[in-house]
Image (spheres, rainbow, N blue to C red):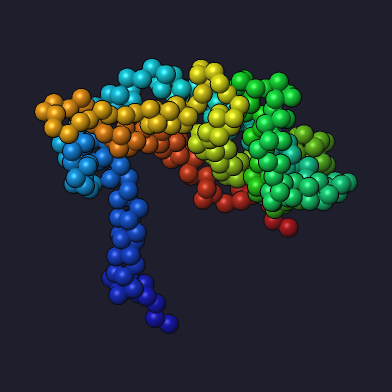
Length: 291
């Protein structure tokens, strides 16, 4: 039987390569455009001359961003919270997903039904606010960590992964005198590293991009995350310009600052992602036995 891959460069392969190149170009164009906008002068931006290459090159937008001490502090503060939420949420999700993956757990199905319902019916902003307030977490870092520790969606993903692990591994561990804690941390967790790494990244990205909880629960500037500080910077950035003036106050526009802040907030996640990406394609049950 002839295959489209028999010839080195068949029509099918050529078409697919062209489609992939077009898809890559469409994906990368917005990124290069943002980089170009952050490095271009405001007159070129106003005239729509900026594409994927900077026009009237300037670094003033980055000087504004990196020169803001509160912004730099909020970046390290947000990194610390993101790490805490990523690790803490993954740990709590493991503790919840492992017992719920056991079919012999009494009331397990009922608990999963309640957890699934929360994905479709949320408590709402006002009840969540009152809960955080009554627990005494207002204007504290705990208001940004505890309410987002477990996501029902990520819990279901990890539970499904645990349920797919070969039962023979747990039976062998029980015969060797290993308890449930040992089975969880010595068998289930090591075999589920791809899934755990994935949900950890989900938690971390969600926390890194989160801003609404800061708006609701936080007043102290020292506890405000990077995303919220960037919002304040963009909102407060105004340029006083009167037509006819020979010398303008600034050589940058709000578009410069927006683009620079977008890149500023993207870099930490872009640095971490390649180290986690390898787990996305790993197989399940590495080193497992077959029945």
